[in-house]
Image (cartoon, rainbow, N blue to C red; front, side, top):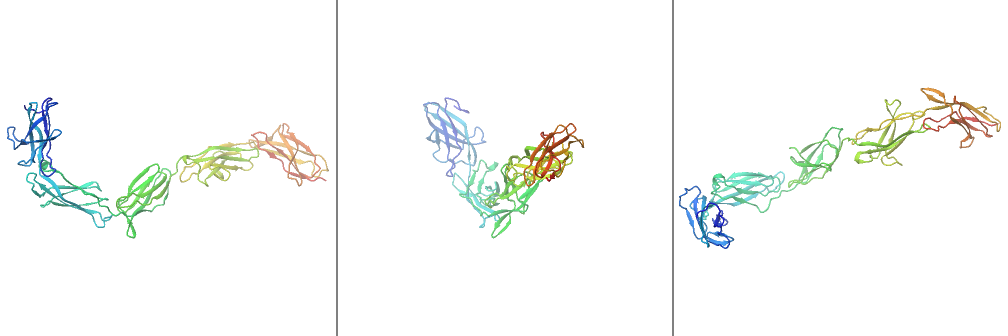
Length: 526
């Protein structure tokens, strides 16, 4: 019975490729019986050239295949075929259930000359280093006839040598004696691999071949450094960029020389590692447009050691500075106070010595610097500022606070705050006599006025006070109070047996007026 495909309940078998492990063509097949309980009892193999006519006679018949195990049968002796190339294998399989099948296409085998690297060696320079890296590979190929065992040089073969240190391969053609030589440049420790891969026309007649080395060759590793030629602190305008420059150098003997085409790494906490490569003169030119603390170092290779890191600080003004808790106020004496906090984004409090400008404008349009105060000065928290201000007799007007920025943060200015208390003044206020008798009552009169639209007007129904300080005393004493009439006129009187200084005062009880006082007058008692 002839089968061209596997049929349940009938024997089946497939041919394996030749096993050339000992330079001979060993032939194996795997056979399956017709079913459970059945056993294959014999296998016969016939070999036909792959493109032979259907009625061609086999060039070899093997009738005595021997059972090994797990369904595998083997020819007791290596197969010898009349020519190198591809062969179709036909199998006759019989089992003990009485089935006898013929499988005309049980597989294809390739009868090949066996290719070997009879020699393979790589040679590195005696001073294998950055400047001396040309590696030479010498080898030879041979052909072994699996039928006769004859060994001969393999000439005209294309050999590939793979450079593991650089990720590429070089090829060479073997000479008449089967030898070849290939030179290549190492990029570090090198352990080449040789390969012969048959071309299309040789794929049925020649085996693959590989050559491996037991260990790599290591070059000498030289110390490196980066010599910056630009400042390590780089100030970049907002929205701009700058360039970090330097020279990558390696130590040769007792001196330093440029290291061309060398990879360096610019690293920063947020961006990670970014590689750059020096030019043919070892020079670096790295554009930067992001603020941060960077480190620049040579990446280690087999030829070059990692360099000490060079610290580079790139300063680009960023948004994020802000004022919080701003307070701008004026008390009744005309004394202004400005307080608040300045923070710089996620950096928090500003650096020690940071200042802010307190700016004043009479009309809210034209500004000038009225004071400069330091953030975090003694007695304040690290981000706090406090400043007392006055323009003339009061703090009336527009006020704002400005941080002028620095190399890391953009400027920021608060909104303007308008302060206003109505000015007041006291006219008169002089005693009725400058030399009273003891316990003689003194009289004081005049008017309390407030400013409105640039003119002074009487301030009626307001309380004024009469104050006295005896000569030699440091204490002022309230002697009398009075309420102004509808025109702002007042009249006060008091007596004291001692000589001293007198004055009339208005102390604002609200948040809309400024205090005022008359002239101080010394009175001598007779």
